[in-house]
Length: 208
Image: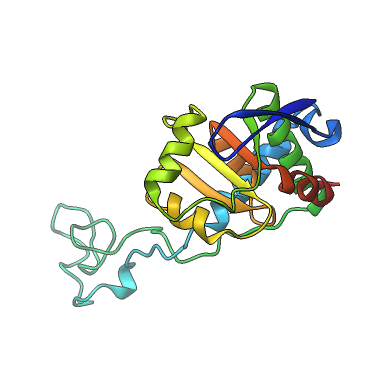
């Protein structure tokens, strides 16, 4: 699969790049994608939710009324979960949502995400973005020239670029990552993936 390389001004050049069929041309594995996205979202959860149970509620433990002879249901203390102001029955407790996946499965999920985007023409290739300034207006001008100003865009760079990060951090629909930090969720959440020409080899080496 060949894609034309765009320059820093957003114009297509005469150069093109070959994308590996083993990464950008496989049949997407939906279950692998599901598991990887599920793990990503689960690992982001703090798990600090907590509700007070009857042992943690402030109040007397005295029996409210006698057991028999009142004509109503028997009742214990005011901290019972069946009473207003009482403790929560089976409420949420702090827990760890993290779980692990095999490396091979995660690679398959990322290959599937790239292949899905490639089939839907969601991948663009650019020259090195090191010439970008730190100004947001320059980054917006680049996106306008690429005609992606209204899309969710993921930039994948070969190495950390402070200018690209500073220029894009105020744009809500733009995320800049490097080849060692992208994930399946980011790949599928973006409408367009813009990959620098230098990062393609790194991605192929990483996923192979």
